[in-house]
Length: 496
Image (cartoon, rainbow, N blue to C red; front, side):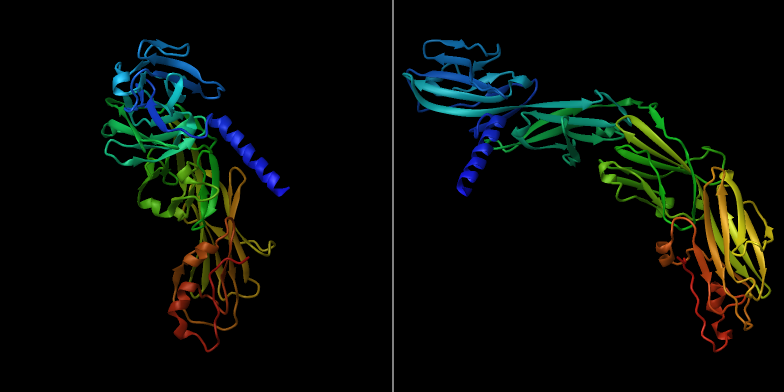
């Protein structure tokens, strides 16, 4: 039973394979480019005398062979499936033994060709050759405008005739390419310059038996030295208005399309809209090149579910307070552009202290989209006195020492005009003992790299803890010698 089942699998596999290729093997593969001539080699110098040559073709998907050319020592004639350009390369074939076939094939002429040599109706030799036709498309048509995206598209008919198609630039360097279903093998060069002009090489590696391991074809490309492309076909997505905490990892959205390269522009917060945009990041997935700026230190291309190498773009930003503002992510696909704008406010809380008070400050950038900013105590019945010493800041002051009535959670909440909120909480703990400290200022949000990694996306709780009165973390490190024998625990991290 098992043996019969295995036999069935093998037979079925053979049928499927045979229906796809028309034959299980061939003696040679010839690849030629559409519009170029082809020579199918068939030689046998040992054959002499009264011979007949039959060239036949079996097109893709066909069941029968058709005669395309027949010749004997007395006459030469063409069959019904012949082409006007078909001829034997040597008219004295009966003396030289060279029976090769020359013609100008089109894509529909690809398939299997048989060179059958007979003498007195007896078969002497048969040679099977697979003819594959390469089609090359250059888009846009040359001469190509500067800054356009050059597309080099190559396909082979039948597609199984090639194991691989690759492209090389005029300098011989291999170009990144991708095989796309129903299209072919595509290579791209975005933002071409005049220096990109020259002969590009398309290389086809054949499948199966072949006397040539590689077929190479030159494709000439010219870039217009006098004209530059302008991208007028731009699709704008609705602008995103949002906020985040300082030093928290934030995702900057890009248009949801697969593209060739991406540009990220930025304008500083609270500036007039789009008067001074700066390019802060550029990535070309085909060239594998990245343009970075000083600001790029806070930026990186996002990982899964995004894949920059495949053209799915997004950015991760770790912002400081001054990194709010307007971001424009532009994705380019061929000569089409897609734009996504993000207006970002950044919230940052800080504390400063003296022997008589603790100041809780709440700073925020990109004020144009902020509706309100406010400090609140965990006991909602207790109202806090709020001050604003400058635009984009709100402060509340607490007397020291911190007592049981004033210890606890203090939250600064930023509300945008679209209703979105972002918040951060400071936890103050009171003590009984009196400590001598000097005044100073410490920012209590994400100053430690470990805190950056632990930061939640919206709203955090930060603790100035253990037995501290008017003591903050910055003062703690410089005043340990002034403390009592009692151990002091302190931390600066989000509470969950």
